[in-house]
Image (cartoon, rainbow, N blue to C red):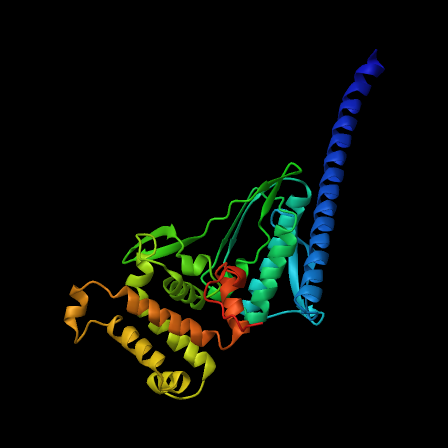
Length: 342
């Protein structure tokens, strides 16, 4: 009895020691798992940097350090095998995005269906890296579509152009594919206030404003009559035609001429050019012809001018085909398509 009374406190001490031992072992295992997890993340990040972005001289290495609150895992950025100093903003953005991409992939692989927000991932990057960032988002996030929602914000028009190509037709929810709803918005600032508005069609639907301007001219050219649905095309025709002609003429003759000389050189001294010059100048400006702003617009003259512009574009039939495709039209249903074109 006396022996049992003496042994019991020792058993309690032993149990407490074993409990603490297990806590220490669990803590070691947890840190080892973290290190292994972060090491795996580093391997993936380095794979993206080396193979996808072509940066074999940059790499990440996970290291365990002692801190005030115990051991912790930190990353060391290395350049050519040595600790890197004075990273550029572009390099920082690139490494940060790779780390973000790898950590998100872990959640996707575990079926967590996260809500993903990517805020301007191309800051301080050049054009090649901008395309690679888009490629990574498309292949690593959008290919399997295991997220519940994906938000991407940017102020870079080149990146926006690439984002329109993202594979976002269907969303995978619990193994069932559902049609994905895509919305595009613009943050508009007026004085000290900012509002979120629907993105204009020329930004959301077309690769460039050039495509949008072509659509407006084309709709005027094929219109049988002016209706409430197509009246805007005619009302804005002067400005749209003037901008389109300036862009198109500069594309054809990219030298140091002024705009008037370039347009005359491209269009020649034919009747079509005079029609175009009159409409694009008089209907896009009211200065000097104040009565123009107080009279009903001349739709037939605008339609003739629109057809003249279309006819000039058709001299390069391959480009005309591409412009038709860019606005969702095809030559089989195009009433203006030249009969002698192949």
